[in-house]
Length: 439
Image (cartoon, rainbow, N blue to C red; front, side):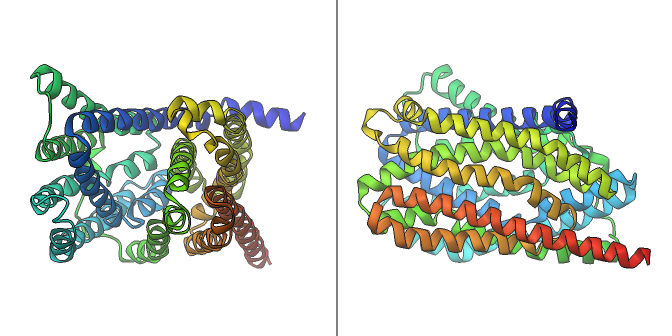
């Protein structure tokens, strides 16, 4: 009966509604991204689409490097300040984050001009002689993306998840709209790479403007921040930075292993399975986006336990969806990729084990985040990457693409086990510290 009451309260909690909005926005963004890719591919042609994909990939990595945990620090400390009703404290959090964001973005762009520009010009000249010009154009779009990335954590901290969902979907929607008007409104039959990059720049600027207009602008400030708060945020962020770096470097190692240890057919099959798995991660990650500020704003152990109990329902719903994906994997693959990819469904079923572990770890990791234990995340990520490397090195030569799928799930299992060990270690540590204070 008690479990039934917990599930009933969880179902009617704001968390489910917020997760729905963010998850729906993530799924719609992924769908619109696929439409954009299709329009680019059909109008650019194979060669120019390959060049554009390369430039956008570099741009995406640059935007990721310009954050390195700054957004997470805003959510962690901003949510706490809002829960305490400390408006000045929240402005101090943003002052620290804004200065760090601008400094890091400037460093990334400067490093790209100094190091990436000659590398791109030398290594990829055979791809397209104009690639250096394209790269320099992409820096403008990257700069807009770096600044716009500051705003989603602000919406998260305030728990304005409907606004976050609307802003999230605005950029891909704007991009599709511009492309449709450009191609069909002006009856243009083909694009050039520079046209596509101008569209990226324009929609990036539009997304930044929309984010700024939707944000509570009064909180944006360069005012002198609290030195103690700045020290806490920097201490917290240094471990998150390492965590993000590990994920950036190790996130796609599986494709390198399959490409190096198997053949092109195995690489194509695993890429298809990995694409579907990545969509599942994107959609389920919407719950983590909601859970991080909710637990960070829970100021008492009882409030945290209440949120943890509510997480049972959402994790169970996502788990049910992943199991359903495993059952219907063959049908999904045939619909999305066609009959040539028959056999990919078996890989997806193997990867569903890892996906279940990832989802089950969200409440544990979010609680550790709320406790300020950012040092655990590089450990969790490092353990998962080590398992991924070992699994791929052992299984891929023996099993091909299925071995990579097995290594993916092994990484997820090691990740959830590491999260459990660290969670219970810090839970017991907090209990001992509380007992010492009481005595």
